[in-house]
Amino acid sequence: MNTSRSASPEPAPQGRTETSTPGRLPIHGLLSYRLSRVANAMSRSAALRYRREFDVSLGEWRTIALLGAEAPLTLNKLARLAALDKAQMSRVVAKLSERGLVLREFGAGRTTQLTLTRKGAALYRGLISAANERDRAFLVCLTEQERDALDSALDKLATLARALERAEER
Image (cartoon, rainbow, N blue to C red):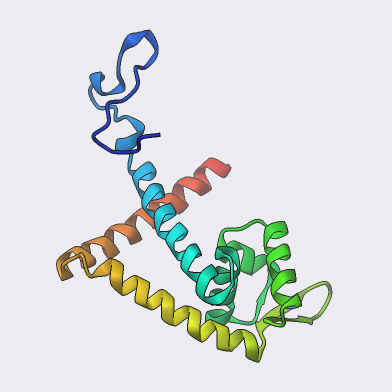
């Protein structure tokens, strides 16, 4: 599959191309598609590095990073922050717990507070250092003005995306 932006779009029904209709972009030109492609490429390269250097999956990395930054967290809150469903997060936490990286402390009712163990905190320090190194490598190709514009644009897009999501849930 060719994902290049310069690739010719496939004909739409009735032999018309999407680009022949004013105001309509083919999928390759849609902002959400482009952002998704960039985010996926960044995530795949991160997953490869974190698996090789730290023996963790991308879901495990996100879990460790979130717990390292905001512990203690409940499973539900952790799943929301990591953009995983509760069942997926439960499996990730179970694996990390088995490896001695995450501690589950049972609280009032059915709540469980999750924190990193000492071993998990040590792993977090290595992972967050590698993540910051990757972040700098991505940002180096942007000027200071471009970085500021990107930060502002991402904040605005995130706010709008959350509002649209809430509207769609009604």
